[in-house]
Image (cartoon, rainbow, N blue to C red):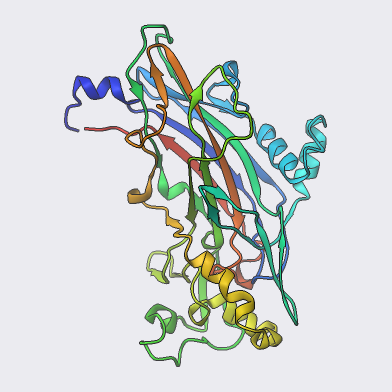
Length: 370
């Protein structure tokens, strides 16, 4: 590694990782019209501090004295349950929270970002004569707070710390289960000309393998950093929001696992899940195109990010935001709202992925500049 200048040493958090691990035995829903259980969902959040003068800390409440190296899973489960049920379980015991959480069922939903804010999630359910798009709470939502600490403590003399936040350990960020099965009929794209459909889709055999993670989405909303001893009011709006997809935007094939990624939110004529839906519910083909096309187009235009190095920087200190770190003894924190859902317009939403677990592990690092 090349040397790091003195200026860089005091302006970034060096070699520091905050690890947020969510192991989710989340049973994916099937197609674009059924429900799923989320039993045995386990969450662990912790900080992995490396040998550094500065390090990141995390909290589930944002209170100054609550920042540490870990957050218990029950704290996150409590947030998810109360976000879903309008704070009806704020004062309930851990046992009750765990029991309620284990019974949550998710249906296929979709959302969009408007003015850096996630819009209401909508349930996507095709029945025999219509398309149901009702507001839905079938997603996970919880807040975490990130701040900084130093080995020597923070005094009025501490200054010059302004941090990026990047995602790292990307290969472990979202993992799923491989499942092998068949098209309900033959490959619906096999006889179409290459000018009309992706060659990967045309090449899929009748028996093929997919990964359950590819139908998942992770949303992150970031709020302007504030001083660590102050509180967010709840009236703030995010300054930026991002969506990451479990798979690729376009169909692809993985030689190592002999599995197919069917792509993200694709047009209907290349969307495997929508083609499957036509077989299961023939009446769908008779629905007016305008009934659903605008919603599908919205999802296609969200610009969901792939999980890759080029998309790993989620908070850039060079942007015109308040610093995340310490300046002249004043320490700040940032609120990050995390969303997790199954995307209702994703091409991988097939019967084949039903009841297959997906695991999410978010690992944050401040980054090292050389």
